[in-house]
Image (cartoon, rainbow, N blue to C red; front, side, top):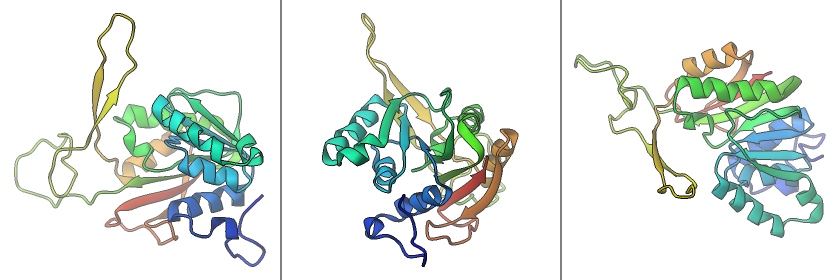
Length: 234
């Protein structure tokens, strides 16, 4: 199993990798055991973990992303390929019989949840699949809060917590065409969750926040950081 050697050096197989891959690989190899990646997208993080010697299951709600991740299999050795699986499923409702030492939500996967209910459902999936003493690691974007204003504005308006004020980012998700039905398009408006909201949702699901960083190199988190990176005990 790959990881830092006995003198704390990064193995040559990880040299040149992007900071998030280095962070997640160190967390996963330090913990040991199988890894579940919720929101595996195009497989960038998941394949790096398999290359580091870990058994990995990547889950994503997009069939297109799962296909893109699977296309990378042809460029991997049989040994690495044998450690990597992908599954098309909704992370909010996923319930497998398997348990994992490490669950990851990389690349702002938590931030793609459209409501507190969706967030708590995602975190319930994390808790369900973690082994005792397992860990959960994630990263989300952390837009700075808008300064207090005397304007009479609706606090619940999507995007109200963003600075500068702008429309909240809207995803357009293309759904599979059903026989005899028009092709559907869903717009999903997202409002970033605050650190307090994330912590509260995690504790409600039986997870215990342990470490928080503002960069993948281990810089302690500060409210003005653009990214919120966390490690959580199951």
